[in-house]
Amino acid sequence: MKKYVCEPCGYVYDPEEGDPENGIDAGTPFEKLPDDWVCPVCGVGKDEFSLEE
Amino acid sequence: MNRTLRENIDWVGHVDWTVRDFHGYDTARGATYNAYLVRDDQTALIDAVKAPYADELLGSIAALTDLSGVKFVVCNHAEPDHAGGLPRVMAALPNAALVCDKKCATALSQHHDTTGWKMRIVATGDTISLGRRTLQFLETPMVHWPESMFTYVPEEKLLFSMDAFGQHYATSQRFDDEVPLGTVMEEAKIYYANIVMPFGKQVAALLKKTAGLDIGMIAPAHGVIWRKHIPVILEAYQNWADCRPKPKVLVIYDTMWDSTGRMARAILAGASQPGVEAQLIHIRHSSLTRIATEVLDAAAVAFGSSTLNQGLMPMAGAVLTYLKGLRPVGKVGFAFGSHGWSGGGPEAVNEYLRAMKWEVPREPLKAQYRPTPNVLDECRAVGGMLAEKAREMAADRKVGGRQCNEP
Ligand SMILES: [Fe+2]
Ligand SMILES: [Fe+2]
Ligand SMILES: [Zn+2]
Image (tube, rainbow over all chains, first blue to last red; front, top):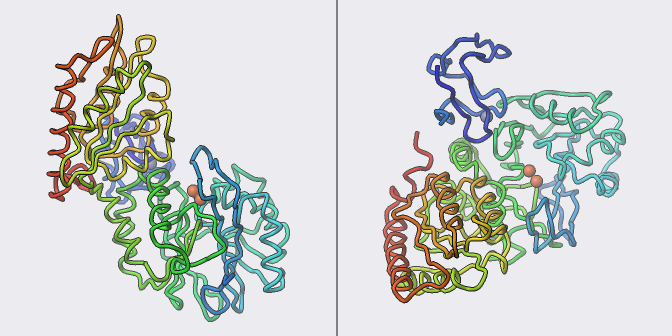
């Protein structure tokens, strides 16, 4: 599964880990994150993320 | 000086006349740390100052009102130039609750011992009534820290905008119409380039949100307060956030024995075309702050470094590292430079240009020891090509903004 980087802050969403603190189970692909999910570090939306190179 | 924004709303900050190095930012005109006191049935302090000036801040509050009447201390941003004075302020205001968003509360607790502080956590849309006036909160993530926030007072059409729209500019005057507009706009541009540039997308989104607010005054955390030239600063922010370039070519270089310098001057000569502003910047005779500011609205950048020990000149490396972090987008880049027995300088420049995802229309141009007349001719030709590109990009909004603010 692909990792995605938050462009403004550098946080990496790793689907293997998910974002359990914010109700996202491990194993959730980035594409399946709810639309209102925000970066747990800086608070910007999904559209600020890009595929990790 | 006139410190009054509206009836019973006053500036209580600090003017820092002597600061010239603000975490590496060259603050040639000094700075101010703006705090504001909103006196009402319940009084609120909006932001604080750097730690050494907390007592001065408390003195300014005490001159206006009884310290025990301050019920709220709003912290719009946890960075120490504003929040550094909070421990002293919270200790001196017996009845005050610290108002901030969730991320800010965490950040403050990581900077200071906040045990014993009464906390009131707010989020976008929350309001606090002071009596006649209301504080309305709008979180502004990554403009320019995760916990950043605006506070708006609808009854006064007054926006406390934190670092956004700020300028590092020490003056006894508090308002934009009391100082030369050119100076304010220059400092606002330097501030945007060096602090806000990486977050253009967030700024663009924020400008859309604030367009829905009725704004008659913008009180930032640094510099003068906007009351006359609000459309001017909003339009400037829109252009910067959209990465809209001017027809401008920069030739930035560092050189050992002036071989790269000769190439730079030839590129400059080629780029000096009608309707195009071409600028030559020798890195060691300039500053990171100035270079970032010039890059902000340039369309094309020719960047040169001689080869030293198989790599970049160290100050060229510093500039490129700084620029890469500031993430200027939508530019055309070109690498050049000289070398002796090994390559390294221009190639390393080129890697940075590509890492910034700039359009790089050609391979680096290199000269061994001294540029030959042929190489200098090629430099002039590249300069002309960059000037042509710069003209096109400035004329076509889409070209300049193509990597910018688009999903
Ligand atoms: Fe800041
Ligand atoms: Fe600041
Ligand atoms: Zn983030």
